[in-house]
Amino acid sequence: MSKNLFLGFVFLLLNLPTSSHAESTAMTSGLNWLKSNQTVTGTWNTELSSSTEFYTTVTVLESFIALSDASDSSVVGRNWLNSEKAESTTYLAPRIKVLAPSGRDISVDMVTLLSYKNKDSGWGGYLNQASNAFSTALALQSLRAANYPDLTTINNALAYLTTNQNSDGGWGVNVDSTSNIYLTAIVSATLQQFPQMTSIATAVSKATIYLLAQQNADGGFGTPSTVYETALAYIALIANGQTQGLP
Image 1 (cartoon, one colour):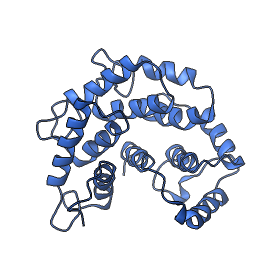
Image 2 (cartoon, one colour; image 1 turned 180 degrees about the vertical axis):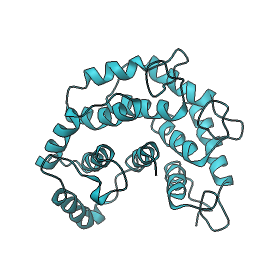
Image 3 (cartoon, rainbow, N blue to C red; image 1 turned 60 degrees about the vertical axis):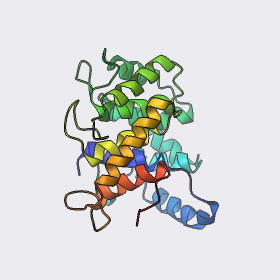
């Protein structure tokens, strides 16, 4: 699994609504396990993960945020994350998303991220890199987490995504690229985080139709079905309330 794919997956997982308190025992047990496996530097390394130290740490910290955990583990982890080098959208966006809710100073990261916005209102990975749906979705998620006040920038970025949706309802790697399950799920879940104005609601509806059409006879998604793509598709569909017909 590539770093970018992993990042998109965990962002989607962490945007789901918080589960019922009926699972509090399991959650407490899980949090304790995570804390016991934190390194002395504040990270969660790759020994027990399929991703990099940076993204693994981001994922754990986002789970802490979702459960309102403000323990020393959270503080030390954010300290480490704040000190790490982050230059691309795929590093800046997750760091902003984790540090913003804690009140950390994210001004430098925000200036850099906003400088990557292109004239078409989308984002690429770096300055002057062509816009793509993945980078734009990540940027939007971080702006939302930071309560960024410029609604024009946000609405234009949302319009970039909806305007560049393929006729089949999906999104591809680049503008006019063939739709795929991975990017369609990421963009759809991102759009669902914002007020459902007509253009967004229509785009999400079309994406839902696309995703449902990709479901295989075995219930999975992908060619052939994979755990990863199936999880992504289900997250996007469930977030949109599409549970009818799903196994």
